[in-house]
Length: 411
Image 1 (cartoon, rainbow, N blue to C red):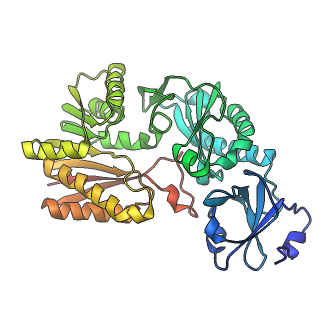
Image 2 (spheres, helix red, strand yellow; image 1 turned 180 degrees about the vertical axis):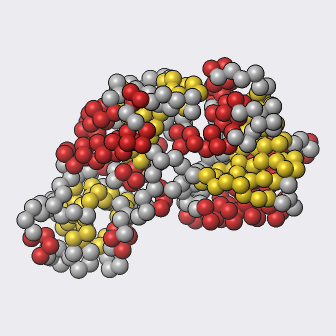
């Protein structure tokens, strides 16, 4: 099929080297704003291009749908960036997208010179900023760039340069997202500045150390910033258990909010060492004990020992990574939430979270309902929590709304 029409003849249209035509009906997601074109949706390819080069995408009838970057060996064959036929995917385009993403955070939180109580934010959030496959976090004057697709390899010198200019950072280091290394053949060493071992940051007035050289993701969970503050408000006068606690940020906030005693469990001893360090940096006088443990097993042991707490925080790692694993993952979430409900004293507070993008709030609330029924406790939702404004959710990409939480009272 000749993939041209009158729309492409308008002045200013510049065709890419390669044209992709989709199968009938596969254009619907693109028209709704999706950035993803999978190999199974492609009917015909006209031309040839290297990984990361621009391609034009058309529907089955030859109508122009948009322009993206090409990766013929990947299941996600095209990542879309524009539906405007007059926009060219070039250096100016990507520099402009980065500038707009950073400028949005500066409008929300002020420029870096004005950051006082908090100086660590997400600056680019993949599809939410029209930059599918890029995650950028700024920690004080250090920027961590996480790359999730091989299509970005050829563009990284431009991306790094623009990030340094737009953010005013002294260092931009690059990390390959682990799944993309396996899934798309992304290089593990992507260049950039050397990663500092530790960067000292502020969040909600507290001091933390982000271990950027070897930490999970980019070293500190910026997405829980507002939730740490909100959850801490319930800790006054309560004995608190924080599970999957990582480096202890929830506990620092709870201690300063008036918790009487705090316990923290995590499977990583190195994370717990950093958690103890964070209490040294933010002394409160509240007794805090950390324990290396498989959380699910430790919760069962606590049940058998008849241990109890006034407040439990559940912030587990992602339990659902594929759609076919949704049911199994919901059962895993239910198991730990059920155990937590049984361990709470009457009137206790459960602050529970999921960072699985495939688990929406409806499923999460349904799971809490199952756990409440089986626990034979009365459970009431006090607050619904989500991700902060530097992790925005575009209406056309609901999968960006990955973080959800509930604060519940358990009687």
